[in-house]
Length: 128
Image (cartoon, rainbow, N blue to C red; front, side, top):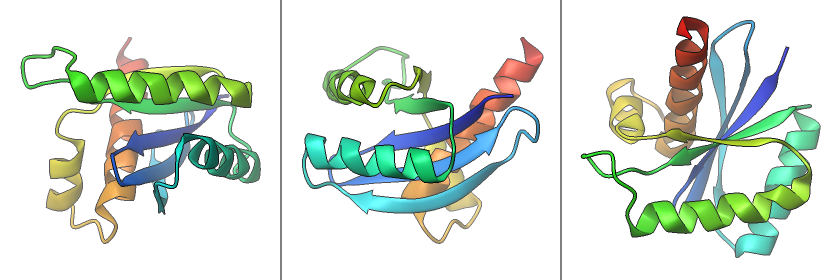
């Protein structure tokens, strides 16, 4: 059973959530303030070890038409930096996760968006 750390990367904050394939439900963790790629990756690595995850799931911010824009390119570079953690890294479409987190009444919208991302991903895997 694979346990995931979902990562919602923004310019100023990184939302985090954790969950596994068995339960299919994600638990929002917290939001990190961005401090630079190296420090951000180190913080994610620490949380990944604490939460005993076996893979990272990073939200890919596609445009409404499903294309990759400048923000997606930045997130891909961040995902490349996460390779140093030695965990498999998957990317998944994060469109509308923030809106959904707000609709759900998330107290921490960034962590809530990461939770929505992970639940959508796990639901799609069950259907496949």
